[in-house]
Every structure is written in structure tokens, then in C-alpha cells.
Image (cartoon, rainbow, N blue to C red; front, side, top):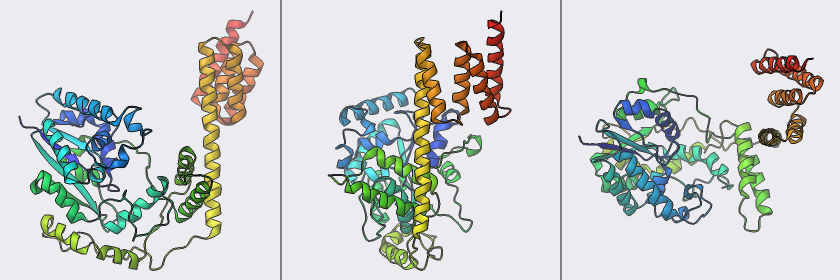
Length: 433
């Protein structure tokens, strides 16, 4: 029976992560419908496959790129392609469709030669291939991407006249032509990622319809919010912090872990609406793509008056400014979150240290590690309960009861408190004369 392949190539900021999470947790349900979402090489997206055929030079110049797992890129890619072929070869004949998804396909495969290499490999997995791509109005994409740019270490202020190589190819007619030239226009399916008057667009329902699976048979789980926008104050705070870090860096690069932790703290504590272009800026930006967008409209959406909505009313008339007080407040919240996160890491380290000490029979090291965990965070119920158990097992029942009492105040009626209370009672009975 012929086998089809759905190649979802993004673009970015169009709900790709939500699509991938849905496919990832529903592999058995998809297989029951004759659809495979390959697990190779692991994770919920096929990033390594997107990296396999790109001529984008920066992909191969970083030996610390976790994609390569410490190996040469060529070796990692060869292993991945072989594993993917083997996974597909092992599918039953009832599996008539394969879905591959990664928004980086649309960013890494930037030349027709790249796309040809991807197509040729895809056609070793299936008989036919359909490319599904979501297009978002260019000014909205630019604004949505800005917070992500900051997290990646690009601390320039937003400038719609200066595009970064990481930006999506905003000339959609040229972009679509490259993929259509390789796969055939009839095999490229563009979808418009555009929120309606209710500010919503159900990308999961749309993708299910395009890909041919029953969304009602899927299970859902609450997703961690990723790549969310930051408030203007958070963005300004992160830019200032980045400039300060650059001043201490001889090569002007931002230190990896320091920057990543700062960006995470700001993202977590200052979520909300960030920078937006003014109506005039957005209108001028979109005028530059008017002809290109109309070519795509004419080719794929001839019944539409325009490729995207043409209103700019949701954007500010004037550039928005950030009061210094708001930046200071964002800084305080980010600092507090970063400190709490640091303490939590230290507590986890001490708890793991105690577990290891117990495995090796070192009672003193176990007790000291648990005591340190409690000192680091006196409100951590788990640390106190584990210390109570440790003290009781080592014969100090009075100290164990004290730790249990504090834990009970912190978590009244808690299940784990009740469990440890019963353990202490059992230990006490066993040690009674």
C-alpha cells in the first residue's frame, strides 16, 4: 500500500511546539489510525533531521552543539538517518502515513539544493510527500520573535529595517517557490496562521485536518509555556543586563550559563505583552512585502482579497516607553527568582548527596547532607521529612519528632507527613524495650 509523508516545516512562531507536543504524547493513538510520528532521534521534534541537509554554516561550527552529542556532525547525522530508516522499515503495512515536524526545516533548508537533499531522503521513507507550512503576517512574526531573540543573546533594540539571519525568510513568494520547485506546487500546502476577531487560532485542529488524523482521539496535557513574550520592562532589563555582561567579555559574547539563567528568570517573572511596532512602522514594513504576499495569495488563495488581514488597529500609534520604576521592579523580581532557583538547585544537590551516602552506608554524611538541605531552605517539607527519618533510624527520636512537627506545620494534613509519622511510630515501637 502506498505510504504518504507529511513534512511540517513550521514556520516559527506559528504553534509548532504545540503541534509537536500533541504528536509526541499521542504516538500510540496515531499508530492506531495508521500514522507514525517517528521517535528517532528522541524528543518531540525532528531537529536533527532538519540539521542533516542544511548548508547553513553556523550549524557545524559549534563543537558544543548538543545535537552532535560530542561527535563530529557527519557521524551524528549518519547515525540518525540510519536509525530513522530502520524505524520506518519496521512499521507495519497498516501504517500508511508518516509525519515529520520541525520549524527549523523552514530556516535551515534555505537553498533549493538543501531542499532537494531533504526531499530525496524523505522519498526513501514514503512514496509521496506533502509539505505543510504555516505563514504568519511578517510584522506580527517579527514582534513575536523579539523576546526569543533576547533569550538567544541578541540584545539589540528591535529594528524592522535590520533583519537577522535567524529571521524567517519574509519574502514568502520566494520562500514558497523554493519548496514548490522541489516538491511540486501541488504538494506544498500553505496555511495562514492568523487569529480572528476572538484573538484565537486553533492550530491543532487545523493541522489535524490537513494531516488527516482524528483530534478527538488524542489526549492533551498542559504544556509548559515556552518562548513566551516578555513585558517591555522585562525586555529593557534584559537588554541592560546583556550590555553589562558584554562589557566584561573580551570577545563581546554573552557568557552562556549566566545569560541563560538571567533570561529564564526574566521570562518567568515578566511574562506579558512586549515590544510592538507602531502602526506606521508595521505598515511600512508590510508594504515591502505587499507584492510578494500577493503572488502567494494569487497562487494558493485566489478567493481571498489579501493574504493576511490588513488592519493595524491593534498596534500603538506611538512608540511605547518604559518607566525606570518598572525596569527596577522587573529586576527585583528576576533577581529574587534567580536566587530562589539557585537555592533549590543546592537543596536538590544535598538530597542526592544524602541518597548516595545512604547507599554507601555513610550515616554521618547522610545526616549532614540532609541537615544542610534544611538549613538552605527551612520551608522545604521534603528535606525535613527525610531528615526526620534519618534521625529516627539513627536513634535520635527526639530530634526526629522536632523535624516532623515543623514539617506538619508547613504542610498540615499532608500525605507525606502522615507517612513519615507512621514510620517514626514504627521505629519507636521497634526500639522500645
